[in-house]
Image (spheres, rainbow, N blue to C red):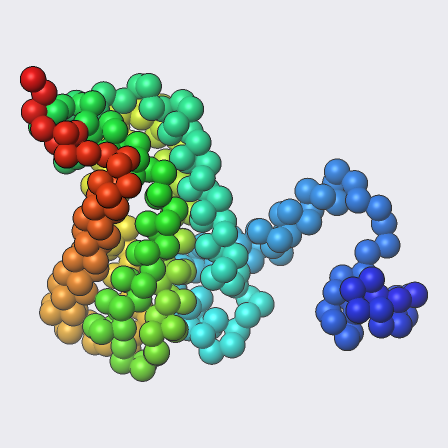
Length: 262
């Protein structure tokens, strides 16, 4: 028999092609095999996905450092983690639009309140929400730069800090997706009201991952952590301001939305 991918001659007992690494498929596609392929692609049925999430909580330096040093089978790679995270974010966005949006009182959201009241707040949040996945990607280089400057005793380069940033942000996003789904189904208003606390926890978790991936002493955390958080938050709010500027330029929101209602 021949490999369907590279046409290399295979022995009948081969499960994978030794030349290109392609999997040997002998049976037709069924519902069962389709589901298995999906789960294997995204979650690796050998518990690689769950192991990655759990170890990012208790020993993130092994996950991130392992990938950087060449360990590629024990944990899920950062690209797959990013794909799962964006998929989960898309589902949360769907729940927000289809189920939760009509149950939110935007006039009570003080941290994004405009002078025109709930209507302006709703418009701004709706416009920003459309670009949430893109904004998530922008946070990765911001986090990587902050950890590169303040947590870099291992002398990782910026690209390697990008790996740790992806692992940190995607792990938090995937774990918090469970909370987000449950909260949106039970109390959408509460989910929106505590969004700032959610963002703060995300920043703290990213700082924790950055520290665990360094060799810095605990005593140095007194100055490293505040500076790390400052740079990260400046980048975080800088992206938010640029987003509002882009929405104003494209006309999705206007200065009128910030004006007091007559």
